[in-house]
Image (cartoon, rainbow, N blue to C red):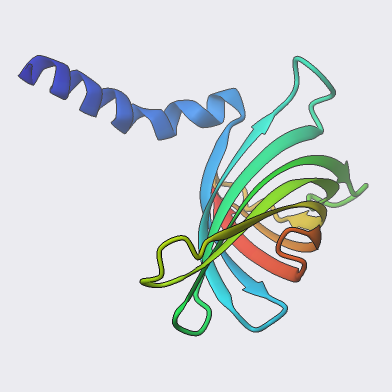
Length: 157
């Protein structure tokens, strides 16, 4: 049993080093919603090279927002991003869209949760740093679902 736990720990420890070799990036993000709520989240991006060009990526993000009590609110988004390199610059603009699930509930009130499905549009900018860290900033209008405008910034590794 100890050997399995040690092997799993080593494998998980090596995972962040192996992911960039596959083009997969993990990171964190800070989001600001139209109604002045801030959120913290995690993001995973992976290239869809075998299916489309290397400029198309799948982005999956989860944000937990902090609205006024007693409301709880989170979003799960799955989007396709299409990178548009800027000639003469290391910056990459991307556009895209996808689906989002927005969930809200009241603290301590069982059965008060409501989930809505919506469509996202994306407009973003990646800023290469010369290292394995990749900062980004993104504007995401939501049509349905959360039905808000979200500004997100974060770091991918």
